[in-house]
Image (cartoon, each protein chain N blue to C red):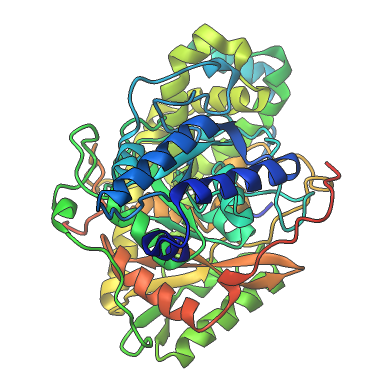
Length: 71
Length: 462
């Protein structure tokens, strides 16, 4: 499935990595969801790589959102 | 709705008679299309009687006696609001959502609540079916509202749009959908998904009907601090008759909206033909380039996933077993996205907004145009399960630009592919709903796509 410019994951996310990450974050994970989450987190890392590739240093991280072109 | 208003005003039909007709249509069509989660016939008939009394007393409100449907993520005093979830079973609010309150104040008769995905977010497959082909996907989370309008079991409906959930069901059901500018319509009393992406929108059979709904519901609301105070001073969004599109400049961003790999040839052809039609009406069509659009799905997915998980954090802890497994997985995924990624997604969003703004300004555009969704409704019988990160799905690809920028977008029928409806979206400048609706109206008046109706003779096979 094409996802814009998000490349496919460059490697699988292991189920035990999901368990470790969830434990560190205090997130409850159902055993039945582990395989799905491993695939999804691998895709999500690819998304994060896209965002990390942007130069955002000078962007004002506004907390509120206003659609008007005031800036 | 326009014709019904005229007949009500002339006394040709009463609100009670009209409401009974629509309730009959609900009874006839619900076994096939399952658009409603809850129907309130007694309340609807009582509202209709009241509308008739008010008209007899000389009142003439914009929606007086018009039967409307409300998406089941909006609170209503006279019906439960269960948001498609067992976790909210039996929930009732003591107050209407502001948008419902304003529709009632304009005289609307509320018929009931329409089916949504769980919390307008889940990936579960609700029972609602596409009336054009009953084995097909009915659209995103406002599907119940869209299908009700398409089959005439409501004259118009309220919906919400966080990643295309008004525009996608409008497109795949062959009706008109409007997602107004962020902050134009209050979301108070509407279940939150992603606070900076959520919009209330409208589903109707014509551009004029969307304009009417926007006109009676728009404006500042102290219950929703995101509503724009200036917009309240915009007194009249009613449409003027624009004879053609001379002087209108439309932008086409071909790489994102037309060359994307998932755009089906029939959809591309229908959208191209619609834009040619607009050109023949006098519009100037300009090819523009906004490379930053390709980041929309990545940025939108992060914000949407994290925001939803944040809202559900407590409820998931208390009622975890009541959630659909598909929803639960998405909410778990959102809880595991790093905070720094979320913060950077919001920064990236600013870049995207600026890029779109610059394209409008540099090219002196009135609107960007393209297909609403890349494909027609897919079959629920043959489509494989969604990929792990469905927020990157083609279903949301064309819609995230409208949610991330907050710009107003109109979707209207523009043809058929494989026998199923295709939608064209028109995205305008901030608070330029009137302008994009004028453009849509000129197109609508030169075609008959919006008058096509599904034939519901076939029995469902799913």
